[in-house]
Image (cartoon, rainbow, N blue to C red; front, side):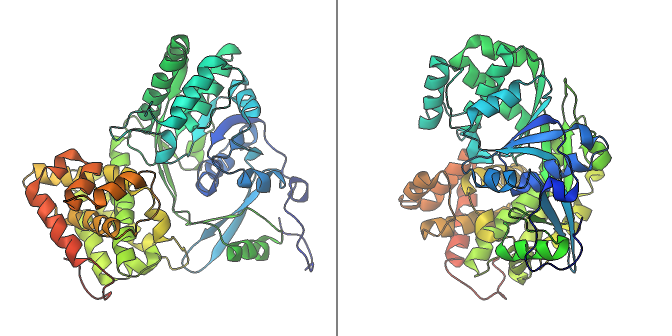
Length: 470
């Protein structure tokens, strides 16, 4: 893997240099980014039948990742960053890295008879959902895609992820290429069912015949994904060269821990992901709940409370006794009702160690983006559960109050719902208006709202890291 000698300038990473031929494309991925490369592409490369399963990966908003990876034949270095050492592996499973706007290539790959799976990592905003979880047909970008696909499906250039996926599936239908599985890998409960509803609803607006074909021919698989993957830095690129001897423009740094749970049918086949550690289960709901509430819920708490308390990363925030105490109280509520077989307490213990890894710079402002979508699935379900049982939901108050405090001060990270957040933050009762964006039931819960108001006032500005926010 590493070239001999110590050249002054490291040679570029290429397939010829490392003798790694590209496997045949049988998977199409939407949302080429660091997480996909640390997760689905990594699992595929480690599968027992990896030589038979290459990925055509398409970018989302920017073509940069495709440009960087194309120059390397799709190869990239994955660095597993533990507490005290780095381990590097070159991952060969991406056979083609392509601009997501290249709809000719996308249609060709999705409609190819050899293609069996489409995976997605487009994040919550990429699905253009309404607060109730249904696709927003009134969204200007979605409406534009409907008009374009209805006018001429064979040549339309949709801009949204649902629109592009629908265009690819329409090409597959026209080509009579047979069944296929769609596998969303975003942190959304029942993500397979969600994408199923979104695609059939969108297809119904474009062509009812296409909607029927999707119902009869396309399988939708739900997943739970877990691997902390911060943004790559120039220092990471330098570390990659030191570890491998090659110049890599697109390495990925991630933690050693990883988890992938899938539930659903694959009518055209799939890689042997379980040979790489993935789990195929009949009921994914408990695994989704554990991950979304314990890991992602704690991440959101640390993001908003940590920013208020002057921290920049997860490791800094979890080292703050006040932040850690708040996380532990939230976890105590979130674990209630989880079946013992999930090992939720052990999972939390492992999360504490993962969060504390000082060599993983997971930035709070990155985690805190898209708070409206994230809090609605990570924190408010726990709060509803606690309030329905007659409990105070005090552990859920802190993340919601911290988010509210940042919103009223105009300090929130980026959010697709930023306009609605700004309007709510300037309402006569900001707490009620902001919580209403997340959950109408909680917004009508006067005692719970009052606790949020009091906590938000206490969290109003930067505080000593010794103070417990309760």
